[in-house]
Every structure is written in structure tokens, then in C-alpha cells.
Amino acid sequence: MGAGIRVLLVDDHPMIRSGLRAMLETDPAISVVGEAGDGDAAVVEARRLRPDVALVDVRMPVRDGIDATRRITAEGLAAVVVLTTFDLDEYVFGAIRAGAAGFLLKSTDARTLLEAVHRVAAGEGMLSPAVTRRVLEAVASRAPAPDAPPAVTAARASASPAFDELTPRERDVLACLAEGLGNQAIADRLVITETTAKSHVSRVLMKLGCSSRLQAAVVARDAGFAG
Image (tube, rainbow, N blue to C red; front, top):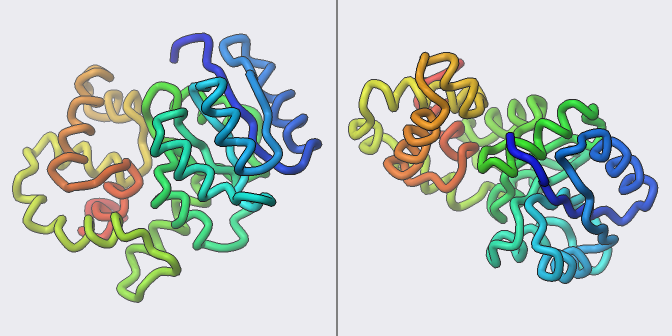
């Protein structure tokens, strides 16, 4: 997992930031280096602090979390985990399009929060199971999803011929991605090293034209790689 993970907290409610800080600081490998109460401040602080991970709320004044995420990821300032109450699907779809690496419900427990920070800092994705189910169900539907990300739609449209380019092992990896498994879990499932799993994941994303693990999970589910 590594050590010294620097985190920026972004939420317009001081009490929520305080609670997140308390949970994160139980892990000696994580340090909260800054806080921001709106999207504009989040971008400014991300530029100043260059954290490893930014935990970003969706609904905030001045600039919302989706736009802040888009700016932070576009500039390569930090990996972003979006926090949501999941009132509206389009928030999560917007976060996918904006380049978020993870999605968590605000009601998540400390263990899951810490795992998300570690996994995202290590270059993996982290999805709340509840969020994963809702997103996959929505985008796998033949009906248009609300605010469906163009990248996901394009990936689905072009995925069929790309599947033919996958090796048998890469198909196994894709099935694991469809279940939301991380690199170590994929390695354990397929009895390979984590480094090899990470390499396979990168090749799968490239061949399918997907920019994230979630997009790959979407096209995999749509193609019947997982139930």
C-alpha cells in the first residue's frame, strides 16, 4: 500500500470534514494536509499542496465537486475520490466523466474509507458496492442513462470488435474488473503477481478504449462477462 499518503478534504460542511479527518488520522500512513469548503478552494489547495488523493463532495457552493474534480484531474494535481449521498445518478455519471478514480457514499465506514485512500493512491479505483451496482445497472440498460458519460457510451459502442483482441488471460482479468476487483484481488483470483495483474489491466483498458476501470466494468457487464 505504501506510506505517506497526503490527503486533501473537500466538503462545505466543517463537521463532515472533521469526521473524515478523524477517521483518516487513525492510519499512520495517511496525513490530511489541507481542507477546502468549496470547489474553487479545492482547486487552489490542490495546486498548492499537490496531495496524493482528494476526497471531494459533489454538492458545494461556488463550484460543485464535479467541476472541481474535472479541473483537478485535468491538471494531474491528485487522484480524486468523490463522496456522494447518491441522491441522483447523474452526479456519479458526471464524476466518471470528470475523471474520478473512486466513489464512496458519505455513510461509508472507516475501514472502507481507508482502503479507498490506499487503493486510489496506489493507482487503482475504488467503488462503493452500492454505487457500482447502480451505475452498472444504469449504463448496461439499453435506455439512455441520465447524463451518461460520452466516454462510457463510446467504449460500449466500440467494445465488441475489441473483445476479439483480448487474450484468454485478459478476458479473465476483464471478468474480474466487472466484479469490481482490485489488482491484488485479481492476482489472488488468477494466481499471478500483483504486478502482472496491473499490467494485464492496463492492456485491457487500452484494447477496449476505456480510460478507467469502471468504464471497463461497464462494457464487460454489457457483454456478459459477469452477472
